[in-house]
Length: 170
Image 1 (cartoon, one colour):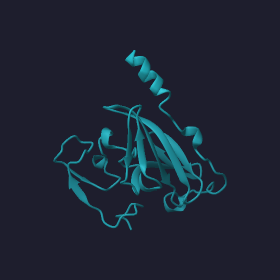
Image 2: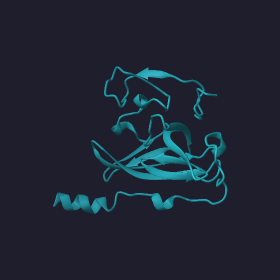
Image 3: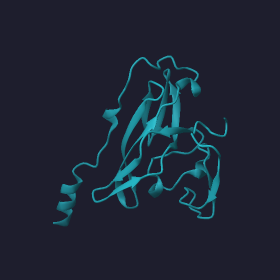
Image 4: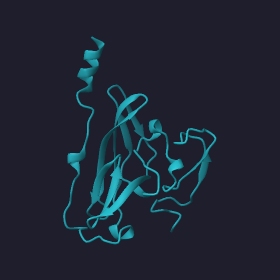
């Protein structure tokens, strides 16, 4: 279904306001990944989504969580999200915050642990994205199924922020 854009939702919908990237609370937003104006603002982008001409909807595998040095936010709204992608070297690659994750198999769950800054400081965003079948998106899938990359080398962390926080308080 063209409307679904690979998203597991039943109907496209729109709403007004709610933290869109355009800054106008009265602007209309929708669920289409290819519309950059549907992006949430940086402070509300807990699943590190990207909207624009190179984005498609991908299934999310887990609840998303944000951690700072002093707080944890757990998000119960998940299921699918918009992410940039590319078809390159015989694989589908999903791009999250400018980090490329290769899909080697359909249903492969890619663990995401990336740090993003917001107006309230740095946050570690943790969740996962599930790979669709490469052939559903890319024309060259010649390397699909040949190897598996667990992507754990791409995990980020907040460092020893508790010690840093104590040093700032001294």
